[in-house]
Image (cartoon, rainbow over all chains, first blue to last red; front, side):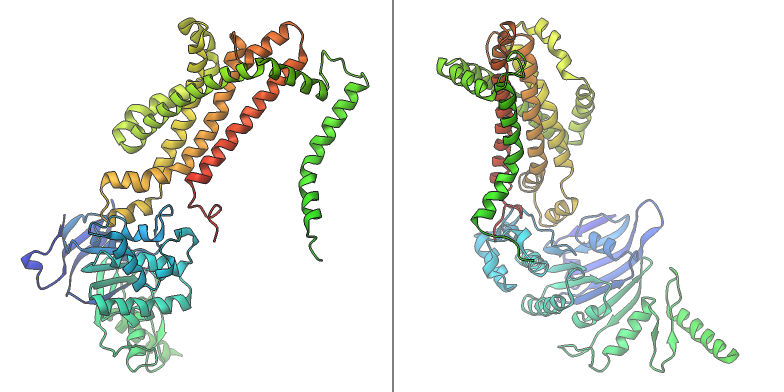
Length: 278
Length: 262
């Protein structure tokens, strides 16, 4: 029903608060009564299969769509990085970063932001001459220059090659430590979520099915204790069959059914049945 | 296999493109010199060049060209302005689209060269009907292309600009209009071609000056060579119009990778 922006007194404790958030496009609810809040400085990852509604949630948070019902409280200072860089091709790189920036000396600020993403040498380049990684770093600089309290990342590294993606993870973490915005990254990559976030949410059929804190020490390596355990839990939550600790195959079932803990129980008992009959 | 290189090879590559036209003209000259074709049907290339230089020396060619160019220029200026204004109204506002688009789409289907008799009745046989025909011919391609360009601007870019907090005016200036420009330039190219066509038709129906008049009066005295010169001038005008749009593209679409170096 409403999107509230601005730092009101009630939102002082939580930077972002979603209350009974429901959204639909002339059909079944894409988002179905979501209640969530993020604290300032949180790094949150939102996982979900395609069609789970995670992009819809992000569009509501950045104000591109209005919810069918429920309340979205977000800070005015928010910025988005999309999966594609979405740079304006007819503006030089620094002008892209400064676009819509209302402050003194936008050029200097744009150049400083480009320096932070290691692109000081490309400020006068045309966007179409940049590589995929460079273009996405410009998009990152364009959001950072606005000093957002809430930084929304919509699968920002999905289109990059694996090596570039690793570098981008490091860069995003550095920038997050330095500026401390609340970050919400939408992704379908479990490893990415575990490398970056303090808290991982799993969206299943329009509801938050899992909300896991990630208390691993940084820098996080897949070999670290606890990483693999969380990885398996999240993959199962996403319905990807993974062998659990005992080497058994725990599945969350096929199709669109919501994989919940109950489902896991049902399935493991089914596995026992199969084992019994074999 | 090694790819042949060097200045000689480059020359040969360029020469190849011109080989066929040069051979054709040589053949044409040969046939005319041998007396196989009557000069009434087709003058020889050399004869055409001689006539062209005569017309140039007498000043007749340049004054006719000036008159014709002025007609196209005025007609195009009005047509492009009108088409641009209408496309902006229809492209930027939904209510504008409702008001303008259906009407223009209906008018567009009318074969506008058929308007000549009507324009003569309305405007007489002076400059007005000729310029009016150029206006009518050029308005539609500009309108269609710019309208499509505005509506075809990448929605993702619009969304990104929205999240950057651009106002509607900033959106139009920084995103929508530059985004519509490539399409608008295609429209301009069409408009120029059609403007030239309108000029040819209107000048041949009624004119007392201009290239068309030169051609029509040559017909009356059976001067095929002058007709050829006139057609040649029209062809050069077409070529020049195309080059002009290319220059516009190069200077306005500088950000495109094909024009960006390094």
